[in-house]
Image (cartoon, rainbow, N blue to C red; front, side):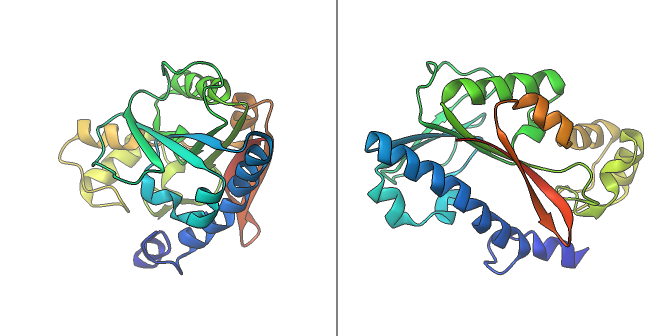
Length: 224
């Protein structure tokens, strides 16, 4: 399990997670460059994102393309004095921005955390409404290692079984739960999607797989 956790360390530039994140950046860069060529600037809304995530894109390119990024999170975030970023608090499933208020809507590993299927539908609708272009990434349900719990096959067990396991010990990024209520909240905090779900939620996107050792690890929906 320690090996799995080490490969999920974004602070380590050589971890698998960091390398995959850098590889994904090419899709985001392509969208930014297209928008800049058309408009001379680029407005991005990052749903559930943080400023430090954007280190995956060359700072010089962001500045040259006059990128401005608005991050949206449910909780208040630490102050950020970087002029590239605006931070706002809000529910990404129901935002008050106008239609196409941004050039690109971006989301990395967020949709699996918004709640049940109805919430996922609302999140997807907001993503598609907020910008003419979007990029959405999420872990794949049928990849054998669950990324949040860092455990092989964990997410394929029934919720009740997962909750019982979590009450016994830590699993990945999730600490041991003190009681059943905390365990169930943790288990239901991450609901992974399969390919059919992503295609339903984002019918106007190009869908791509991110693979490792020939297995699909995560899913990407891109409307360019």
